[in-house]
Image: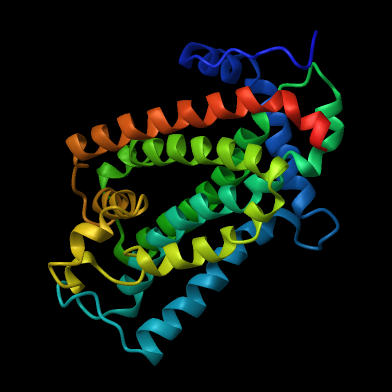
Length: 276
């Protein structure tokens, strides 16, 4: 196999690669999760405690120190505020955790680059899989607390995977592009954490969209996290059906971005070994 040969970049090739390497992706994601907590006393249990600690800190700062309220539409309960806040954090963390790692994925796995038969395109997918594991753990914690404080759960929770699917496609597309760019331009990795922090406060995580002036709301909708956070709250907290038309449009755009990111990665991967 020639490492400098052109790789297929079609959408069918993308799907075929993911399906063919699905077991390898799962194994590598599992290894990454276990490796992250290896040697610690509580091990994977930290994946439960980390989001709870962050939730506690953010809830205290915004609901106690700043005395933030959710636009007056809900009772000013710290429990409700925490649940609202946690949904936004789950979505943002899924996006941020994947993209923060993406620029250095190839650089940190030089041994895989040298193995010309290794499917390098699965590395960003593996990073996404690890982030998805943590998102699922956080979601399980959220559901447990919701049932504890309310005594029921909305049946619309079954739509949560469909709400997240467009974001997953968008995230992996951007991750493919960043993973490739990070090989040729190492500075790409530096501003990502800052951008993710900006997105945290530019997304309706700590506040509802209705708290903003009407003139600013359309700009907030350009944020890729806004629609997903709002739809996640609709199905989890309010028992509402998702906005299928909005998700369909988002999904179509996300699919195009995923394909473009994959195509860029496959077109540029033949230069990885030369640069590294």
